Length: 449
Image 1: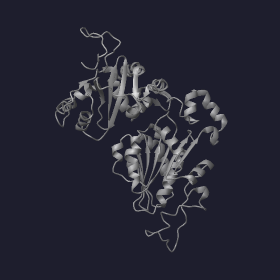
Image 2: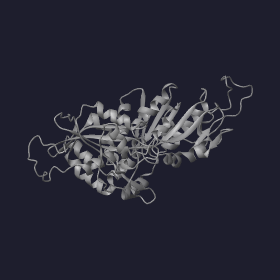
Image 3: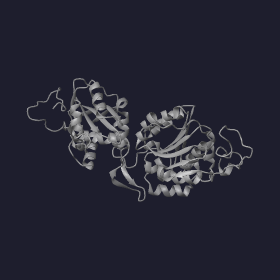
Image 4: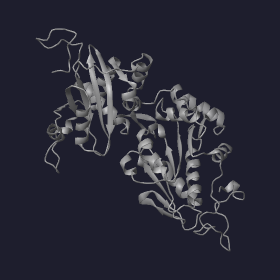
């Protein structure tokens, strides 16, 4: 299996057995991988179950552990055409984090083939290990998996596992390992606590202060240059630390503390405004909002991908809301070459008469969101995914310099954040003077224009 324990448990599934599983007359020597697991890594390998959540500090070696677990499982699998995957938030992250490791540790296996352009390794028993990115979730549909590693799960959309990966494991009863460091109280946090209370799952939280992997002198140096929150998150695996570079994390945390995230009922007497982020290669997101005086009530949120505008039009028609306005991004007015119509016109033909949100720049839009969030109330059940998107929307980080760029990261959280930005820049300010001829009253609805 591993170099340090090859004599006890070598890999022999690739060349030591024929297609029927029976041994050959002359057994070849065991395959020894150049992997020497640390004591904690060895213990985790031994304790793995079908579903596993490993919350580990930076430089623990969770990627090396996971890649070797994939290789051994693939090489010893007796099923026909086994399929394994390593999934990162972005395809380029998968390549940067795991490709060199996958090539290095699988190299001793005879007749192994590496496909650089596809980031895939083929083993002689017919097994494949592929590196994939969750940034194109629909590209993952239609596959089956015998085992999968989901790296930096805290940065992925929760629907990647629940809607795509989990069904892909079903018919083969495949296993899954979730690895990463915390990024606040998100889906990874919920998964870890769920696993901690489920005897069928393995859950481990391993901070640097307990693992012994990094010397105390190195940890002390890290404390000197990192903020308290950064150190707590990256090295002590704290789910309570703020997400580095998050635009709205503090404001969402304030909403949580102040009780503005909970049950927010729909008020039938008031109209509902929607704001959309229209996706082409990624998801489309829609916020549903009502205004009650200075309060903004986010009563609903919807996100989907891989469907046409008719799907969203039907969704809106099926809901019981009376709509005041629908806001779309500026590029919704651009005519598509294939149809000759804009998405604004297509929605109009489907009974959704939308308008364009003001064309402010991203930075101005982000400022508008920051001014808007303190007067927002969110329905936790209906808007959970959107809330997490706002919480995790963050600045891009230059890993070489350790500084944050001006632009935001474009990932799963961008869908909810962009749609909310269009809402914030389009909203009338209820604290400003009302238009002439409109007298103050309890029935005043700023969305009913």
